[in-house]
Image (cartoon, rainbow, N blue to C red):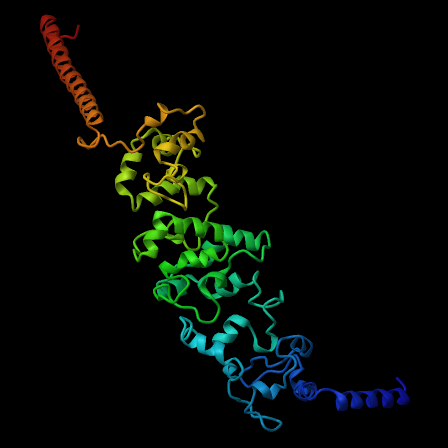
Amino acid sequence: MSLRDRIIAAGVAVLAIAFAPIALRAQADCLACHGDATMTDSAGHSIAVDGQKFGSSVHGSLQCTSCHADIKAYPHPDKIAPVDCKTCHADQATSVSGSVHASASDQPCTSCHGVAHYIFPKDDPRSNVYPLNVPKTCGTCHGSPDLAKKHGLPNVYPLYMDSIHGFALSKEGLLVAANCQSCHGSHGILSHTSPQSPTYKSNIPKTCGTCHAKIEADYEQGVHGKAVAGGNLNAPVCSDCHTAHAILQPTESAFRMQSTPICGNCHKDKFSTYRDTFHSQLGSLGGYVETARCWDCHGAHDVRPASDPASPINKANLVTTCGRCHAGANASFVKYQPHANARDRKLSPALYYIRLFMNLLLAGVLIFFMIHTILWVIRSRYSQVKSRAANGGKNA
């Protein structure tokens, strides 16, 4: 480059700096040192800043001293005060201070949003809080077995990633799939024991209903939803049946096979009678996935009592309900009692006495043949001894 070209280039640079926004000129001053990729502090930590990347971040239009407010002169001291994010983000800082993360880190903001110089908008794929990146960001802590053990928390990251939500997000790239923030919130994350938390038991139907609106409406019409709305927190909500993080596709065999024991956790009496039926034994012993489970007959979300005309187990609806699996079901067919209790004489007297008779008959047959076998062994032994005596102590 000739001397003339050098002079022109220098002049252009001077003019560019002179007419550039104040923030950019201030950044240029700082980047004169911090733009050096090899720059480190006294402890050997890198304090270099990629000017181009910083310029495209959410803070790219700010002066460096907007955040590093204690720097008044150059060169500045080696040790400077930590950046206080709440200077600009007061509402978010207040929310975090009252959350479960209040004492989780000395710098909770950068723990989630990343290095302060390279924070990008939440709709930017480079952002740590972009929907596709949220599980990995949260998983930095909540995927740590050590942290889970320390705080008595489940190691939820692998559970979520293997769930229907995690699969939809990571494999299908569906931004509308639920991620951590969808259920727990962003800054004011509260414990599930707090009534203000979206994961508090009575709030879970509304939280899940943000995406599953039709299912929420059905649930609220059912006996479970009405019980929870009435203050009965022993009644099940979404997470009691589907779990919180390891949510399976309801049509998968893994979910169908475990669905009946889930209902049985509360309905122990009905579960014990169901296990005596052909439906249960075909499913549990034969491994037949398509056999009828509780929700095939009672419904999954809009569960109603048999007295309700809209219930699938109402007498007027039984032919239709059973007919879904059993083509040709009629009024005689639906007289079958799926929860008949052979152990309850008052509830099912005929079945009780038939069961008693069959058990006595079985016991009698077994006892008879046991006695018969013992007598046969004794007689056989006696014959052997007698035969040996007749042959002078020799075997025949």
